[in-house]
Length: 136
Image (cartoon, rainbow, N blue to C red; front, top):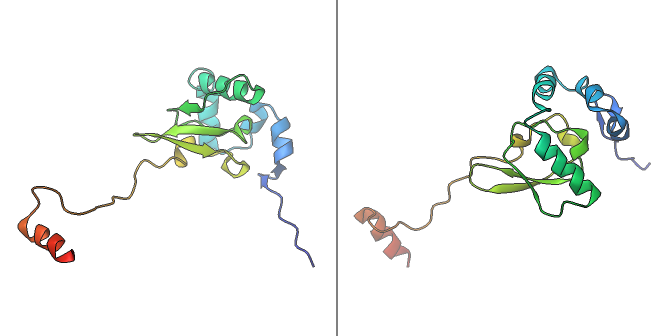
């Protein structure tokens, strides 16, 4: 028996069905917090980002799409695009997939990274400098 890969659905709707919906119909599918965010902010705060995404899909916007709008809810228009999301220090490129629908952009661009320490620097304690000389 060959197992078929499971088709992705969001709240019982396939991706094709969701792509055909307008924004108001999509808002009925998402949880209440995301619905409220979309209802209030889609008009003013996210217009420039959505305009860049539409232009990029048409091919008239060639630059990478960069945004600071970490609180933007991922909508079906974004699927398949790479958006560079600001993480506080740099822009992290994120490819938007179907599984990300209904989540916020900021969830995928982490703001905290693991600290990577190397050898002790100048002015370190005497014991730490002794360790560095022994390792050689």
